[in-house]
Image 1 (cartoon, rainbow, N blue to C red):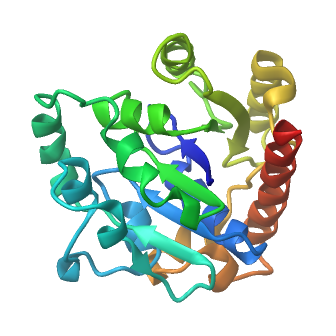
Image 2 (cartoon, helix red, strand yellow; image 1 turned 60 degrees about the vertical axis):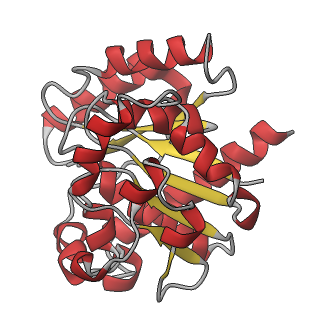
Length: 258
């Protein structure tokens, strides 16, 4: 059965999709059959892996509305061991329809059940909000990873996300756990980044991953070429950081299985 990880932060621009795409890629590179599930209506994870949105036949919109099984939406990628369940902006409209459905909170969980034995990891890229889609992702997941940028207002809104997680743990998903917090956009040359990282560690303590993701031009460029950073420039600081982060993620998941 797959380990399901939701990458979530209701604040946008924190490196959520970058983390989702590159974590999924390096999990696959490490030999784990991995599915990247794009559950963000912006569909940035889909384009970040080079999928042409205009030519997609089935997407997460069809899946979440019960019009197609997840297996039909899953696409083969040119990266060994990695598959994609794509999304387009139509997913935002689907959320309105989802709201009137009787099992609106567990649609994603139920969709994943049919295919999870085919994968070792399922990475869910959630929307940058505490929407019904995000809640679906958290209910479907075993673990939550929160990317937090080392910039001003970094912890804004994180408390509300943790409160939502606490409510779900007491009700619809008692097995949900915070796997860790990853500091993103870190610039060691600035005192602000260093100070904010210290605040993140003070707030989350041992839940913070040792690896920090640097502010890196190559990381920003990779999505426009439709490839993960490990393909675009595997020797860049960003690539090395995500490879190291993935090793930490695997280590924590394996530890929790004991």
